[in-house]
Length: 111
Length: 115
Image 1 (cartoon, rainbow over the protein chains, first blue to last red):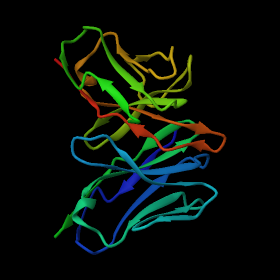
Image 2 (cartoon, rainbow over the protein chains, first blue to last red):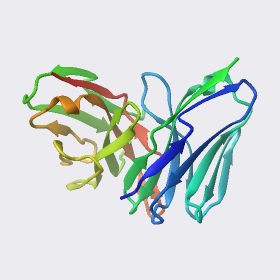
Image 3 (cartoon, one colour):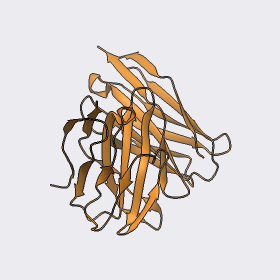
Image 4 (cartoon, each protein chain N blue to C red):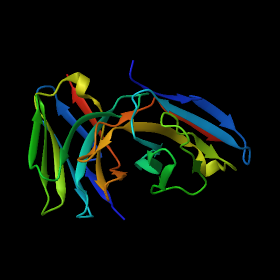
């Protein structure tokens, strides 16, 4: 089955710097790649997603890139702010229905 | 307000005592899913459902059952809970069109402890 790896597991950046989180997946059939942000005590919330027919997508300070050949996708957050501190999860959806998540990255934005 | 609700939010039970965690969504979503979250493992999908009476196994279905008799409800059933099912459980729902899934909305979570 699908396997999703995510790095780094923890990331600390200074406020205003950029943060990059990388994920790799194993199944070339995967065609949907969402990113979720989870704040303490809450359920995950979608922040951005990308489908396999697109290489890059941007939404204000957040961007996602997808390299289908290498089977990896990355989350980029620019001009980080303290409220960006959270746990971030990537996921890959394969066979059109099954979600497989990475283990998560704890991002800390230091003031 | 569009939302996914789960009940109970917290539950402590004993090994072998059957329990049900309810999940309901008010967004008319086709797709519903259950996940468990454990430290260092991220979220793992237990079961999912594409529509009424259509359910399928995720990556960790052992020890769980689900049913989808109505579009809005997707209960998770543990018929004989064991301590290794102690975890944080999330229900989620989304639209699912020809292009695949839409935004997946998560419930607030149910923290289950099995003694």
